[in-house]
Image (tube, rainbow, N blue to C red; front, top):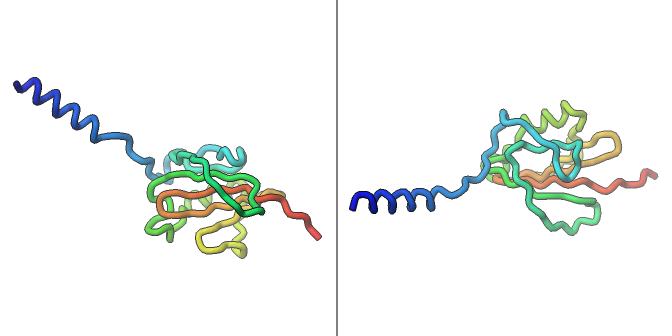
Length: 130
């Protein structure tokens, strides 16, 4: 009887454990984004297709990562942004709009929109200079 109880308990624990969501850890490192190989994202971030209708966006993905933006996405991952700048991606602070941050390197502009448990990475279309 105890054997069956043990097996049942083990089965319940296994079923309930499931897969946990990745959690933001600034010390875990970074990997190339699949949106633009030169633009990094936190190593634990898991990509997911996203829809967008903005005609200024070339391509983009949603990355799931628990607590990446802090409470309600109000606290952007500054260590991540500092690492982007170290790699030559300069934040265009004058272009910032709420949760949307823009980074530029040479002629490429990337947008990072940070929410509480996910963020979007978009490569913006190149604009013609007048």
